[in-house]
Image (cartoon, rainbow, N blue to C red; front, side, top):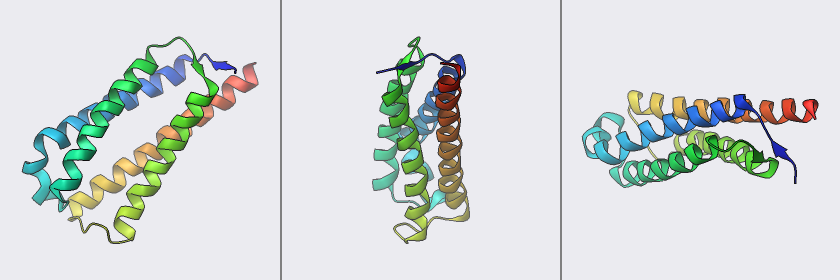
Length: 131
């Protein structure tokens, strides 16, 4: 199994860790305070926040590693792409009915996940070209 050694990839993962950690803490700790503002159920907000805190910890650990197995990076790409798709489907399929601010948050963080997936994918391509 080949490994990817990329400072750019590590920076992308670290930035993703920070963003997930901040959003996760906000949703987990302040979910009750923002549920009405977002128009999202607390039963969704708090578990997502707790998940994001754990995911941020995993990402932070990965960002500290000098190299990552290519399969791990592909999992991150797939997870971020799936997160982006689920964010859109959450609204499009009517599973939730967020306020305008809630819609902006759901769609915005979904787009951010898609950008992160793309940057991770580009890191994989760049590492392959360099090898």
